[in-house]
Length: 308
Image (cartoon, rainbow, N blue to C red; front, side, top):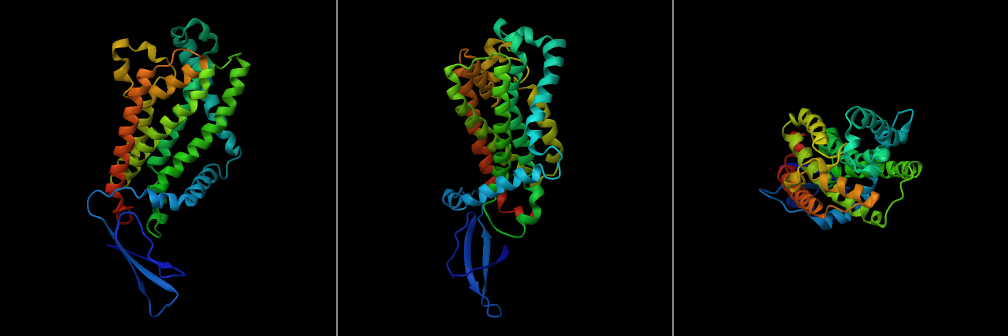
């Protein structure tokens, strides 16, 4: 059982998720303070969505703080959100597109626009990799906050994912400039791109919830996460088209939740056939990851203050 003291102006009980009994008790020596005893719930605890909605303004400030802290004391500031995908695109184009000849695997009309093709894959991938890398370490990096005050713990990895989404928005502006410079005219299907962004968010949140909770309990994941993200990139169609995978294995390949969004965004931008089959499989795996991540997070959450 853990205890926390709150300065309050009323005697109303504050409902909290994962709290079996939250009873305010008066302090005779300090009449302005109120002691609240917080007891964790045994077993699986459901998500209190009403409480998340009530604390929504806190989530906004946590996202804003995450963005500010990330680029604090840097010379170029948020320009890094633009430079990283540009440098990555240039390196991938030279190494994989020209030297390895991967651009020859694209349809003839897209070969000259290989940098745009790569950038279209980097947009969702960099969002996902940043969300997973930073989100997985978010709870460990917020130990002081976790052990001193109560707020919905889900907001910590969620805020990190929100910060990565801001970076993706900035990179998308450069993507439009890149498309114009290569003469790529977007098709009407580009209106569906936000659906792929939502799908990437669901997968990112699920993995971030899972890894952040597991990292608190098992610090080995601090070493697992960088390797996992690096391996995941090569297992995703960032620099190559999913069509190089034999057709009979493509739906199996789409169990990787990043296959559907990456291939979907490219098809919607370039106006080719949308791979709905792969998107459907990736959607199911993303939802499974999201549900599993939430369950694991809520299972371990009661012990965060003790083991963080």
